[in-house]
Length: 149
Image: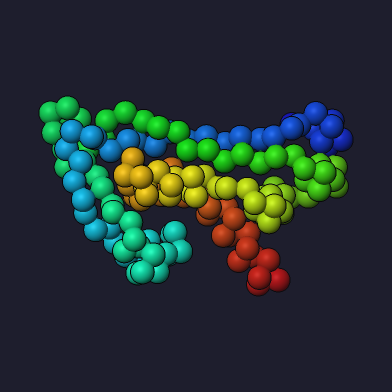
């Protein structure tokens, strides 16, 4: 973008990412069992952890026009610009390295925020994955490249 890193680090307080996931229709909400392999691979859940969650989705009705979803709700990821992240910005660290540092400092990812919405029955794991696949794929691809070097 042509902006010097020291200008970014001196002015940024936080960076927020937001996605709008479709909300499960409350009129036709029903329990179901999602693919356990999907939960294991994408959310890192074992069978015991997955069995602690009551998964819900809309069956489809007149209220939701037979989609199973009605309305949207936000999931968020907020990265605070700590002194370490400001320093990394000035040093022109990669976006992946900065994200990894933010995760070490306790940042909650979009997928983790989405998982909280799944646990409360507001949306489905499939909907969260649909909207967070790009963000997590970037991190995974980078980690694989670093591991193979």
